[in-house]
Length: 425
Image (tube, rainbow, N blue to C red):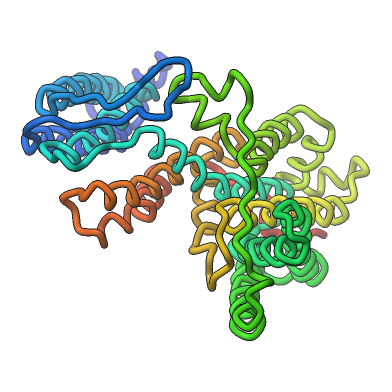
């Protein structure tokens, strides 16, 4: 017996079969740390950070911090965390999520400080950065919840983009006709359900390919809304009014420093988003409906043998999920106080799918992923406002680059529902 075989057998007999080394987290952490160090070296002077509007309990104004010193502290923390990640990887141990979070947070903070370093006219608005990120994340959360419900029950929903777009259209027209943005919150879910009926009809009833049907529905909605916008809304501006939902601050909670104005000084759509995440999380994993839904998405034949009407449940779930997506579409119009424009959804339906995947088909995970993408989107806008030393075209690319790297880095470690996209029976 060769000497190369003996060690392997010995390891197997002792129950010490070594796992393969996972290099993803160490490499990503090393790259972010190297970029943090580079930006620190390029920083000079002071960085002005504004906390205006963070709370009404006491006065918080602008804070001036030394860019180079702060960057050194953050980069050192990132370097230490990266070293530990590499050590754990070489020991074939799983990377600690908090270590990766430290590296990522340090990178973002160094980047923010670097962009305003040495610029007397540039101020980094913390509250605006965070609250804007939450607003951009809201339609992504609604879209991701839609994808989770559909795919957990076995239907791949690529038509989220179309549902968001039609929801935005219906919301602004209904609000304009009724003279109240609350009417838009009634019409938007109906729009999403209309798209869902077509999705369910072709995928469940006629057993068509789910991906193809979703793409076609997106194109249908884009064409329909563009036609209606060009022929109707432009000629009748009274049907396309910018009617924003009123802000509903929650007493006491809204005054919690930084967190309060960001989370608890929002519109009804944002609060409904909180409720939707909690409700879907509990219902999906702690109710009979959730158990049946997951059974239909994992093993529909087994579900059928215990009396679950698989296709009927898929129909119900797809239509219900469409209502959630339509509500997310209302964020683009009445939620942000904007009139409707062509392709106002701007690809957010596809980013919502990425948030769903990155969140491992779990509502709370998708919520966290959507916050990441929303923050990245608002970061690009804020960086343009503070005259960041980066071309504007690159800043506009930030949310999409973050989406690509996030999904490319983690999609291999997740598993989709086994029966998604598979017709039954």
